[in-house]
Image 1 (tube, rainbow, N blue to C red):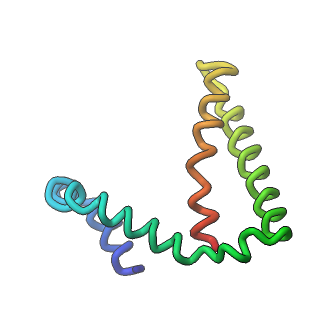
Image 2 (cartoon, helix red, strand yellow):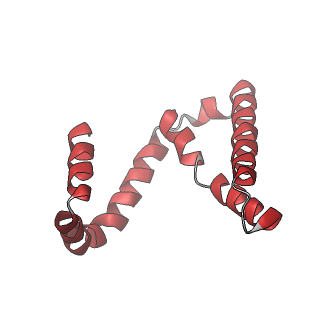
Length: 105
């Protein structure tokens, strides 16, 4: 996995290689690989442990902290959009980080 990651980083820095990757490989394999990846992550989720009261409490605590943290970060990005723009940025980030909890488990 680390070798694949490093190869991806190196290839992404070379514009010609990155363009060839997008044109030849990424479009054709992105959907199947993404589906297999999420399915394989789903098989690692211990459902019996996940719905234990202590695990639910910890998950709820992390979720609230993540949501509030992303919302506050959006408010820190207050700019030309004002209050509405800051809220849009903060709330748009909420759905982006939950995969991190799955990966951390």
